[in-house]
Image (cartoon, rainbow, N blue to C red; front, top):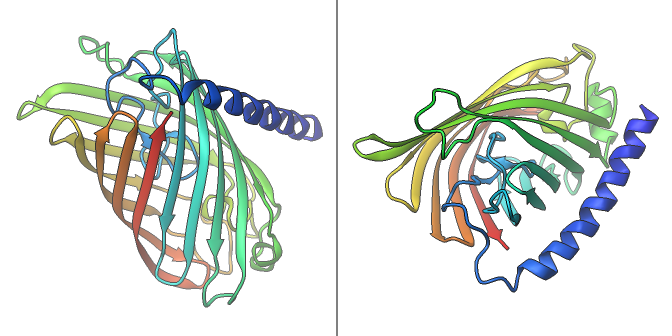
Length: 294
């Protein structure tokens, strides 16, 4: 475990150094890349390219196989009794490899007044099969494998609830298919992701618990319809493990609208049902995320 953690910390330093170099060199470019608008998705709350709740097989940004793409994002959502913020950077290398970093913060509201929980998430995604845009005449979707290593900074509350540890790694495989001119002449996108995880509330309440401390494979799905070339609507579902005996954990669901007013910018608004968070059931929120393609 220690060599793996050291390797992730080295990856963090390399990624941050690379991101600084890429941002400084890319911001001055006339356009962010050669790929079509929206073909990198928006940014998922854990930093990966995809939907709001789940990573897709698409590589972030607009870089083609000969280019590098960089994105930055900021997301906020205020569940009924909590306050959630996330932000980060991602780099897409030659439409093949994605490196990402995200910082999440959950204000604990009336559960623990004045306190919050934060975590860092380091992501790696590799496209292994297919191309969602160019393989229209094939049944095969674009497929990617990835991981998200998470380190929780504030374990007092998660430990009190029964969490076993403050670090963990999610592994996933994602398949994304895009159909052009499919429904009333509009484009349709579907994604299915299978995630192996021990995380409680994405890791904000630690990893593992008194009820379960083994990896569980959780399905995540997204479906989107492009009303125009710059506006998409859709829905997502993300199943989550239920590891803590103190409070049951429920699945995530959302309905969203994503707007791409320019190639550099996307804005995603959604209504999200988080279910129970810690001791508070019925947590819903208006979700807003902005992504900048550098």
